[in-house]
Image 1 (cartoon, rainbow, N blue to C red):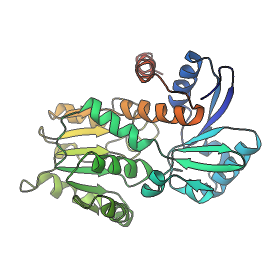
Image 2: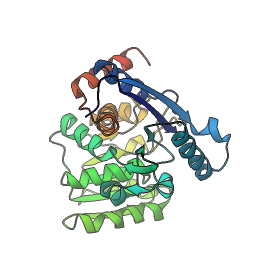
Image 3: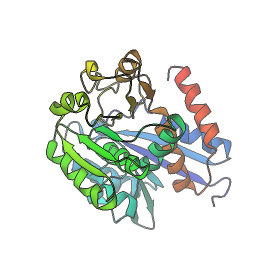
Image 4: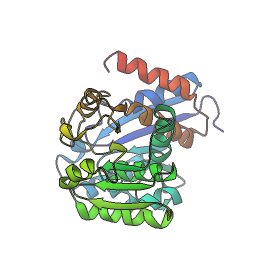
Length: 297
């Protein structure tokens, strides 16, 4: 357990991270607990100037260790690439091939993943009766891997992962099948979404956008809004903005929706506990997140 007055230095590595609410979420909770906590975003584009991503990840990890950082949170597009630069990865993170938290201690870099539990808690709280008969996840990156695992752990019967890189989607689905033998999982390219969502014999019951499409830096919607049906539930992991174009289109189509705020708070709370050893007040963190959104941050 952390001692009041102990200090922490934490960073967030990813692309376009300056507007992220994760740093103030951590810092505010630390303030409430009497911990000295400094959390800084490390924008990948500012560091490498468009250079090679893997080399930049290595440089940042080396620099963070040298400067005495306690941890780094990892986001798009580094969650899968960072694995090659770690000394150890927890079983849960290794199972999905994605890391969003790296603890730096005793000269070692240990990767964890709190996205799985973050999405699981968000779905449980926000859409507790969501039909998990057949869920489509858009995006086979780090967030998509975490969301897919969380859905299967929650009891999804059928999972389809759609990604511009159909081979990557297929590889993710194949990696999950041995862990969840009672379910079926497959990977496809986005051009089959129209057929999937129009299939009334085995209807899709839920849709999750786990891609970067919809972020401030990547505006847009990841599929044709005309494919949305009122019997679908629709979730988005994007939270900047919290009300994405996808969610607005889904509400207009009569769908129940889940924004990315719940996952953002859930993963942040779990990461805070890993970094400090202190138990976060999740309700307080949710309230702080809501206040920042209300303020337009």
